[in-house]
Image (cartoon, rainbow over the protein chains, first blue to last red):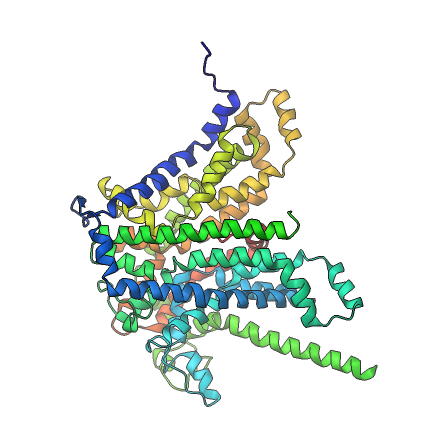
Length: 305
Length: 279
């Protein structure tokens, strides 16, 4: 009979990785499975889960606020995220230009992404104040009457886009790193051919960083589906109370994770919240598969490196 | 020729002006935070709003730290941050070493699983985890906030693994021939060589734990045990928000992060840029 023998390397590898393995089982895998089970049950903080079959899902598909939150999040994912990506790329192009302050540029553009989100959001709420905020006071210097940013349901989402543009530092850095990898000789030979700046941008810069852009686009898309802290802070601030569950003016910034949070911790419908979580899981899972496929394709197009 | 040169000079000047405007826009929230914190409340609520205070006052800082138990919250936040750091700095190198330097079948599987766990939204695991901690009677304590750091953050493990892969294997083999066991090779060879990556991970962990909002929001409801990020929220919950105090409180909250950023800017930047992933 063959004896099952575990090699010393196998044992050591396992022991070194053990903290992560335990964490994975208890903090990722178990909650993941339980969450799926919970989505077919109903319970609150104290009660035990009771099987209700597909009721939570049926409930959600007839819930107007569910659709509202999904459409708000889709706006952020499919309208705001592409805008933010373009902003990040433009900032990276500036920080990549050969000029004396390029180090300063990188620092200034990245700085907002470093500071705590809560503090940053609060400053923005103050700046967005229609009467006393700096933004509208600045606009009034030019005779422009600024909108009631976080009060008018038509402008709330655009306020988020503005705030987001300020916070694209991480994406900017990744783009910058990609730009710096483009060999200078490409541009030099284009210069010899008499290409102008725009042609160089379209035919050299964009193709060279395309794979990074695609990857970042989808990563940011996935993050957009988890956009929570900013809207939570804004809605609790304008609501003036933490016990209530506000989605902003006319629920215009009731993002999907925010509504999920309300269901779980305010309405105490843990089962319904779990159902929402699993719908989110499926969306994010699909996006991840697309990301893996696209980034494979992009890298093979770039010469299979 | 001369015209060409002036044209170039002008476009250069235009670019500098554009950049200056952009830099001011990006710095403006910092400026607003700082200048508002030195204003009187009346001044902050006077139209037209001036950037600089009409009268500089310094009492907002003193008032802000009295309005909420500021130093207690800072202590709580520092406590959580410290234990998060200990957890990550012990566990991340261990796991990364297993993946990068030990030849075993599990390494590839675990690497794949780590990437997969990064894609699981926090909201999916949030409810079962809450129930588990609740059943253990640990909601309201800092355990749910700190414990995950003792499993190693996926993103940090990946950074560390990449770094360790860069260390030549021959060094470890030489130590093996000299009779060093796996743990000694890790401890006395691996760790000292990973100092730059350890610094990066320490900074990220500090930043994440210091700024964390969602986890304290879910687990900490006792006012005495709150963290600074939750404490700041208390200013907003009042019927009329005292923005001058809030901004003063925010300045003190943000300051340690800014100082750290300026000291370790290179680590911050390289961590993001080399991995191409979001922290």
